[in-house]
Length: 385
Image (cartoon, rainbow, N blue to C red; front, top):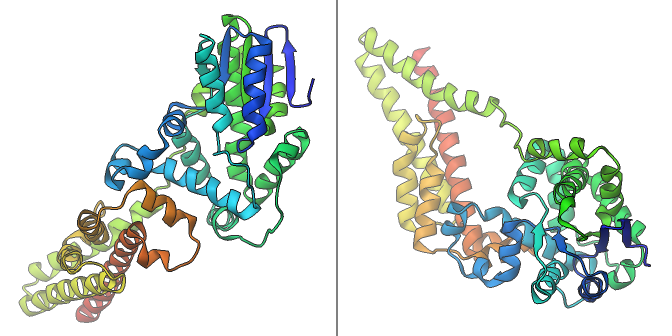
């Protein structure tokens, strides 16, 4: 029996796979036929299964619908995997997760029920992103999307024979971003083991998982079943958002309202008019310039400029959002545009890709609006002094 196939006991077999390997597709089909399980457990969640079964849905969907449906993380995941394959020179003819889909199809063909045992990918990505500091986030983006220095061509069909090598790759990922590695690897090892424990009473189980998770799953399965299953609820939670950005966002409007109130109370009519003029002019002008620098549509420029003086007073809104939304409706991107953008093969994609243009319009509009608010605030302080 191969090193990537582990019989935990008579009723549980773990099959480790490489997610871009053609050999893995053959392996899982052979194992289902050979082992004759009562249940096939697969390292997938509903979101990833849907994207594997209907890969064109994401590419052909309107980006706004994707965001509204909470599927934007799937674009990031697919693009990062594609970029990683390109960077490592992987040429296997298989899409990431093909062997997992093959396991489900083989189980269905044999009239064997299947169980999805992975944590929802959106929760995983959010937990990883929020746990990382700025330095780790930069390292991850650089490693996944921009670092093209590694010219080594990896044969994953060979790598599949060596579980330790796959584990070493995952440990290397943890070295780049330890907090993200904890979420993507250690937490998922515990989650997969907990889900396997939950379904242990359903007969002979064949669990198809990434080979790099094998040792972690085995270690967690050696713990008391109640301990691993009780931890599942905690692993599904998302970490709280930091509060300091909200404090900063509220500071500027509170300052302006306080100044206006003080001027009205003291009857400083001329100073009040001058204050409001600075606020309107600086916010509108710089927000509009920002959107224009992003090569936004003229209507997006007007919307950003008009919204900025108002949104700067409301911390829950931003001028760039309105400008970006206008740009998105005028030239609606698709999931395919998003995937091409996230490949980030050159920086021209920010201007030439519809997703890149929407993001630039949004970002530059917000930056311009923020600069306008700061400059107007400085001018208002000068008036008071």
